[in-house]
Image (tube, rainbow, N blue to C red):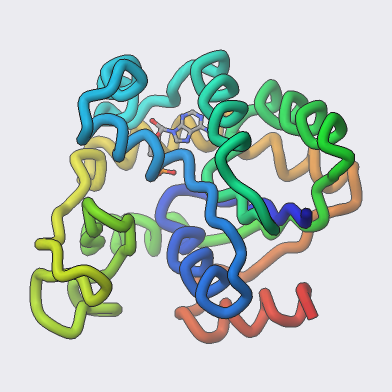
Length: 212
Ligand code: AMP
């Protein structure tokens, strides 16, 4: 079991590159944001617990997130792409412990570095499939047929937290709680910086250079 963490601000392209990695190498994609949205959609107890936080752009408390990840880990196998977890130092420490118990470790942390102006453009234009979680962009990465997912033909939606007001809150949470993970993984000597200002293919090429 290999573990690759994709670390970066919201809108830095982690989800899109995860999809490519899943397609190319059959990695298992563990996106805590997708798990939360799926639970909200299905109105599960977990969804009810997370809804307020997630739709307002705030982080869900660590204990809820850690429990969610522990449960989810029991249902999946294979090499994992961690997208959106960990997002705090407490989550990162817990992940180290969980992986140690599984006789595993973090192989790579790819840090998607991006200019904030670009983030806002990307998030405001983003369309998401509520069924499979695939993401598109209205102009930069449109679906083949306008408004519907290429994968399963579900009508695409704009996420409730993908607007300018919520992005500001999400970026503040990123700077306060998540950005310190860059130093955390640098210290562990597993961090590689990816220039995520570039568009899709150029980002992919950088990732391939690391994983080859
Ligand atoms: P994302 O799809 O990764 O942008 O996540 C969407 C929202 O889900 C975030 O703004 C948080 O409210 C919540 N969320 C996802 N992952 C985490 C996490 N690791 N810790 C806390 N909240 C999270």
